[in-house]
Length: 222
Image (cartoon, rainbow, N blue to C red; front, side, top):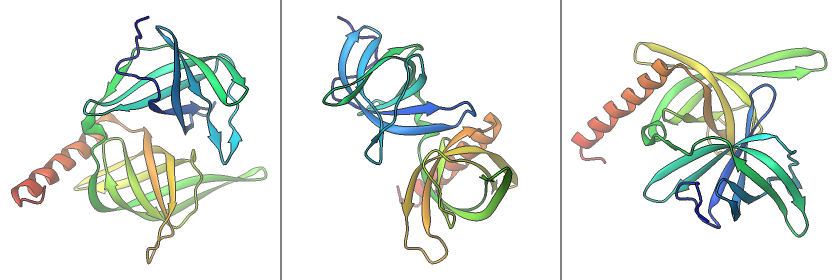
């Protein structure tokens, strides 16, 4: 049987994104367990803090994987069935073409930039917007690493604003990684993935990264 999953192999690590009704993405690790049909797979089901994250038949997910020396790939899929015996497994069917993610979108440039971050929390029937000034430690066309004071959970949806040269860029992002840091002004390091960004703003970021790379090459630092 010939697989239609480009460069995907048994045992390969995956990241699956679950998207809720508010278009909020939550990422979980998974793994390829078995090829069933040319466009169907058995994968390990997602877990969070030792608990099963239950997905339902016909639920839509996004799947991401990395192929050594080739890059990152992604495709959309639908849950065909779920089962729990010795391990939690999902049968999924690919519903889109396999797409290669452009490397330029994901090259992270170490940098220090001031970033304004906003986050909406619910308190009973009321909503409160928490805004704080954070510090970007790296940036790419696909996301940033932020140092901040407010504690977040993986999957939190935030809004961000940053000034690059004379351009004010802003958009939305999902928190995909949270770590504690021992920094003077900050308590947490957040990995954020852009979910809503104007293409012109993304191109400004990528151009900014290329310019800094060129300077670093001239100085012999990369």
